[in-house]
Amino acid sequence: MLDKQIEKLIAAEKKRQKKVINLIASENYVSKDVLEALGSILTDKYGEGYPGRRYYRGTTVVDEVELLAQKRALELFTLDADTWSVNVQPLSGSPANFAVYAALVPQGERIMGMTLSHGGHLTHGQSVSMTGKFWKQVPYGVAKDTERLDYEEIKKIALAEKPNIIVAGFTAYAHIVDFKAFRKIADATGALLMVDMSHFAGLVAGRAYPSPFPYADIVTTTTHKTLRGPRSAMIFSRKDERKLHNKIDKTILPGLQGGPHFNAIAAVAVALKEANTPEFRKYAAQIIKNARALSDELARLGWRIVEGGTETHLLRVDVWQNGKGIGGREAADKLEEAGIIVNENTIPNDARSPIDPSGLRLGTPAETTRGKTEKDFVKIAQRIDKILRA
Image (tube, rainbow, N blue to C red):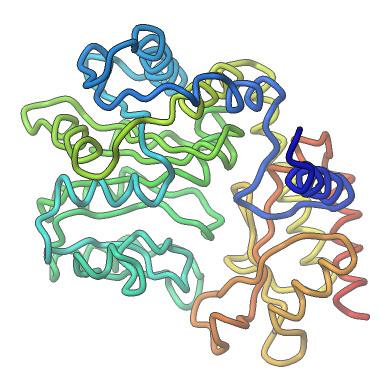
């Protein structure tokens, strides 16, 4: 590389990644093939529009790339192309979610999503997000005693508030979501049901987590977490008389974006093919085994696990423990100094500030990619315990 400054920084980041234990729940390590596609000559091609309907010429090859990515996305999640459409052009998860609302929810109307402190995402209508400025959030959370979703309470809120769309999907909820229950709530209130499976898409692909597709109207996902692809996103929508997919496509282009990033779309296609294998299914199952091992050992060592455990790839640990432990930011800093990368995270009904909350969020996808198994995560838990109690 002629630019030695950037070359040096890339090398430094590569070195940093190699020497740490990465427990960031939303990070992973892509294959060489994904990296090769991402850094390919496809980045040079501009092509506003959709396959066969571009506003630029010379798009024969990139049309094939996009069509292949769509085909592989539907195949991976066993979806019928007559029933489901998929848009692979969103640049990332936040703009994908924004596009769905912009397409389907009139400005000023209501998005029902989990509150941030309980495990929701900024783009599920939080006030600090543009989704909370263009639309009104109807928040729901978890039960105080169990820290789990209370579907009867969610139904009561939905019946009272009548949201236009209900969002199921989270960034820090560790248990399996009952999509059938959400479907019933949506039907009872006349709302659309959108599932944001960004965090657990790879687990769904790997048959290690229930599929939301039998129940959802729209499913959004990033491709760079458990799915182990590049930083990009996809929007799946049902094909029926409501024309959801047409509205979403028109909102992506010309509404929000210009030319697609064909290098990223190609890299997504590579990742989707990799995920549709027996090896990936074993990987997805191991992610969950590792998370349970990490959770169980931390609990055995005396740390309170939010929600009482995990059924997914992540868990939250209450490191504050009513003043008997350590603040989340200090805990994350201490762990990073020792080579373990996590992020501080709020817990339900957190008495501390989001800047320095009571919890940590830990995830197992990245280190599972590196080949670690349950016994390794037991040791990681013991190391975390030792560092935080020092």
